[in-house]
Image 1: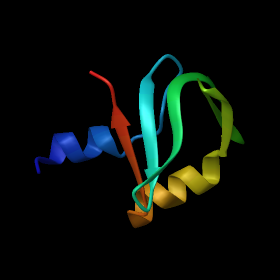
Image 2: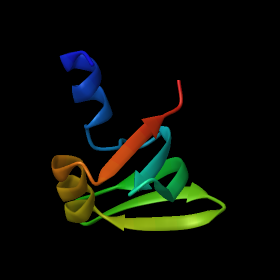
Image 3: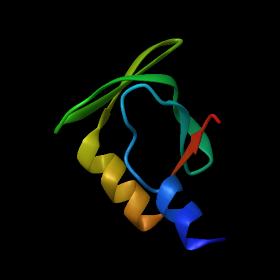
Length: 71
């Protein structure tokens, strides 16, 4: 995997992105990112999912969390 691709996949979600977030190969959030702040990331899909920003950052760092972005 190229370095640029790894950096892109491991960056924090931004408002307006459409994505899926997996933790241990299970989907924990899927849809449109509507809000990102210091404490929460809100994703609207089938309902709204609020994720803890620190937990997402830790999961990306240790590899337990994976983000797939729609192209």
